[in-house]
Length: 134
Image 1 (cartoon, rainbow, N blue to C red):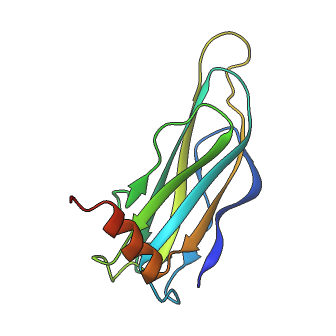
Image 2 (cartoon, helix red, strand yellow):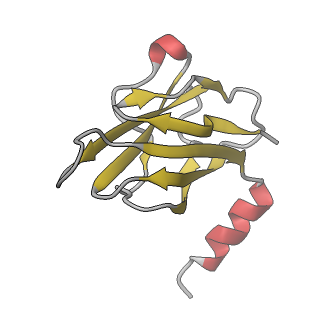
């Protein structure tokens, strides 16, 4: 089971950027739980985080495979990334955009991490069964 970080723990950012490329080719399942954990912020700012993928570092797509809703506050935010229809994706990279408005310094500041955990087929089937119409 793959269990790693798309964005390392205690990453601090003040501008848009990218995390490291993470190889997911060894994953036995093509579903992943991403957990964005924001541990530090200043007021009146926003973080937008998307995940891009492709066959390798050079081939990361132009459109995100998944995106978290825009975030403003500390907390943990989950996102299920299901890639069974995209077998060519063997590498992932997180990309973030930040902005700040209002009074005070214009530079945004966030501290966060993004954990990537492979989801077992059993857990995925259980989740899907709970969301089927009865």
